[in-house]
Image (tube, rainbow, N blue to C red; front, side, top):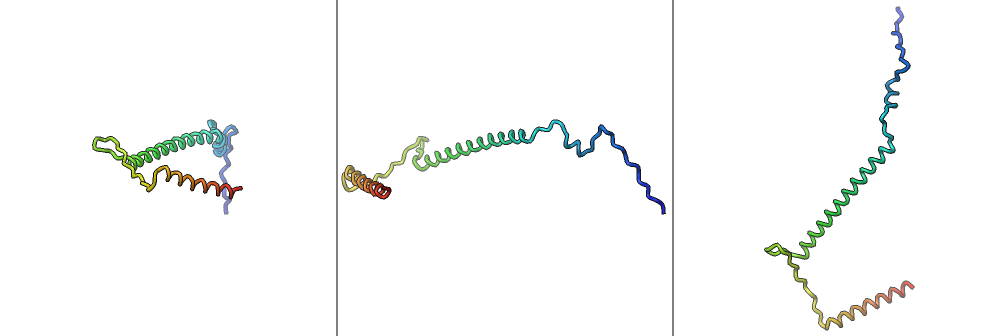
Length: 116
C-alpha cells in the first residue's frame, strides 16, 4: 500500500492577515456608542414629531366633536349655537342658590371634622 501524499502547506506572507483578522480591523469603523447616540437622537426627534402630530390631530378631532355637539351650521355656513334648556325652579333664583350653598357648606364642615 502506498502512502498518501499530502500537498505541501502554503506559507502565508507576513504582511497579509487572515480573512478573520481583516474583518475585525477595518478602518472607517464608527464607534458603536457614538453611532447608538446618533440613532437615539434621531429616534427621539421622530417620536417627538409623531407625538406632536398626534396631539394636533386629537385637538382637531375634539374641536370638530365640540362643533357637532355645541353648534350647528345654518344654510349660509355660519355657526349657530343651540339653545340650551334652562331648568326652572319653583322659588326665586336667589333662594334656590342660597339653599344649594348651605348644603355644600354643611358637607364641607363635616369633612373638616372628620379630617381633624
